[in-house]
Structure formats: structure tokens, C-alpha cells
Length: 213
Image (cartoon, rainbow, N blue to C red):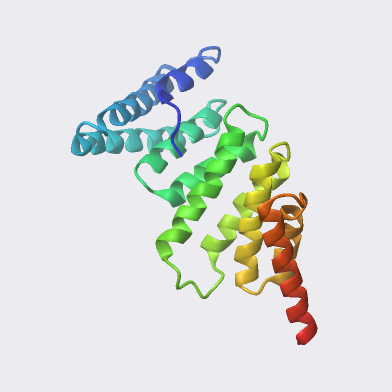
């Protein structure tokens, strides 16, 4: 979910105090420079922007293959996730947003990436349309992203409630009642909110359905 104007500035700034490997620096600079060129071009010339996105993508992939275990990997996962979001590869964006949080839940990009992972998973589900009858990997990925946000960022009660409700409702739709109830109880924590009322109604409905069996 791209919000920040200069991926290059962020990645280079974070790397400024780390030991230099000339080959690593060259590859990283290529990735983030092409990425920023694409970001600047996308509203002016979308075809040319895609040329830069593809160059950035190739450089990121090569960087991860060669340097994916180095100290800069946190910022590079963030930058690459933003690129994948920009080109609407939401599954890849999700994977890298999730890795950012897994690496350091308290890191400078992590809360943003945790929420962005939820949005990326939601984009995948929305692209599948309303004819979803099986709870598959994409549905689980949404729940995993929601659970991650719920676990690590309780300080934002409103977002936490909304995300918990979405995960709970998705699970409820697929008949996973116990799992749904766990998330819906979180969503129902603030009785003054509209989401809380909706969550409570679903919990009551689920309990009534279970009793009727």
C-alpha cells in the first residue's frame, strides 16, 4: 500500500551506518533508483513506468538471492513489497509485508506493513469475486495477516476491531465458528462502536445455529 514518496531515500538512509560491500551497494542502488523512477513516471507515462518497474524487480530479485541474509534485508523487503503493491501483484506484496513484520514487529515500517498485508490479502480475495465456496490458502492468508495485526498492534483499538471483525466474519461465512468467535469477541470489545454491535449479532447468530443442530 504505497504511501511514501522516496523508497531510495529511506533505504539509503537506513543503510548509511552499515558496512559497505560495493557489489551489494550497486545492486541495491539499481533496485531503488529504478523503483523511484517508476514511481515518478507512473502518472506521466505508464508504459515507461513499467519499464522501470521491471528493471527494479529484476534488481530486487538478484539482491535477495545474493544478500537476503544481510542486515539490510528488513528495509529491502519493505521496498520490494511497495513495488509489488504498485504493480498490483498483491500476493507478492503480502509475502514481503509479512516478512517485514516477522523480522521486527517494532521496526519503523512494521505497523504500516502489518496493515498493508491485510489490505493486500483483501485485494486478492476481492479479485476472486463473491463465488468463493472453499476456505483456501488466500482466505487463510487474510486471517494470518489479521491475526498478526491484532497481536502486535493493540494500541490502535479501532483498526484492531475492524480487522478482527473482517477476519471473524470471513471465518463465520465458511462455517469455522470457533475460530470466528475468537476474532469476533475482539471486535465486540467496545460496545459503543457499530462494528462491536455487528460482531455481537454474529456471535449470537452462531450460538443459536449451534443450539439448533
